[in-house]
Length: 450
Image 1 (cartoon, one colour):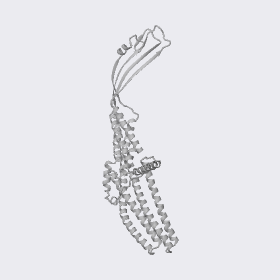
Image 2 (cartoon, one colour):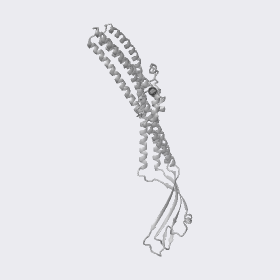
Image 3 (cartoon, helix red, strand yellow):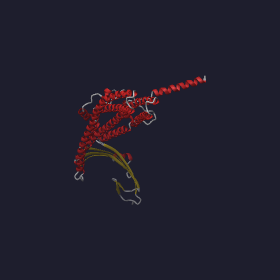
Image 4 (tube, one colour):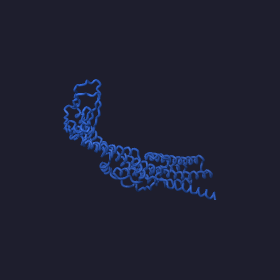
C-alpha cells in the first residue's frame, strides 16, 4: 500500500513538472514591448519627470491668485532701571507709572496680489505647460527607442534560431559524408587523410552550432536585460512562422515615410515646442522693463499689558483694516532686461538649429532603414536563387563523389558554398523584415508581432 502511494506521489510530481514545462511562457514581440513599456526604469523615470513638470504648471497657475497669510507676535520687555513717577509713551499708551516687565501682542492677516507684471506670470504658466508637454514627448521618445531595440534583438534571435537549424542540417550532411568516408576507407577507395578532412568539416559544423547557440543566448540575455527581468526564470521567445512573402513585400517610398514621420515623431514635436517655449521666454524677458502693479490688504489688532482695558476690549478697539496699491517701475536694472532678452534670442536660435538637426537625423535614420530594406530585399532575391543553385550543385557533387568522379576537396567546397548561401539567404531575409518593420514604425504604425 505504501509503495503504491509513493509511486502515485512520484507520478503526480512528474506530471506537475511536465505541466510547468508545458506552461512555460514564451514571449512574443508584443509581450516584450508591453512589459518594457510598463516596467522599464527609464520610462518610469520619465513618468516621474512628467509628474514633476505638471506640478510646476499647478504652481505657476497658483501664482496668478492672491496670497494670504496670518501672523502674530508676542513680545515681553524688561526694563531693570526704570525711573518711577515719570511719564512714558510706548506703542501709543501713556504711562505715568512704568512697569519693569510688560508685554505686547499683535495679530494680523495680510493679502497680496500681483495685478499686472507685464504678463510674466501668465506667460510663465504657458511656458510650464509647454514644458509638461515636452516631458510627455520625452517619455514617448524613450518608449520608441526601447521598442526599436526590442525589435532589433527579437529579429536577431529569430535569425539565430534559424541559423542553428541550418547548421544542424549541415552537421547531418557532414556526418553522412564522414560515415561514407569511413566506409570508403574500409574498402580502400579513400585515404585516411581525406577522411580526416571530412571529420574536420563535421567538427567545424558542430562548432558552428555551438557558436550560433551562444549568439542566441547572448541576444536573449540582452533582451532580458532591456526588459529589466532579473529573476532566474528561463526566458525564451515565441518563434513565429516567418514567410518569404514578408521579405518580398512592397517597400514604402522614402519620401512618404519621411513626410509622415515629420507629422508625428515625438522628437520633431519636442523641438517645435522648444521654439514656442523660447518665444514665451523672450516675452518674459521683455517684461522685465515694465511696471509691476500689486494690491495689498491688511487687517490687524494688538494688545498690551500697559493698558488697564481688558484683553477682549483691546482686540476690538485696536482693530484696523488697510488697503494699498503698489507700483514698481524699473529705472536702472543693471542690464537685467537686455541680458535676458539677448539670451532668450540666443535660445530661440539654438531651438531652431536643434529642430533642423532633428529633421536631418530623422531623414538619415529613415534613409538608412530604407536603403537596408531595399538592399537586403535584392540580396534575398539573389540569395534564394543562389541557395537553390548551390543545393542542386551539391546534390550533383555528392552523387559524383559517390561514383568516384569528384574528389574530397570538391565535395567539401560545394558543401561550404551551400552553407554560405543558406546563411546569406537567412540574414538578408530577416534584415529585410526588420528594416521594413522599422519603416512602418516611423510611419506611426505599431511594430508588427512577427
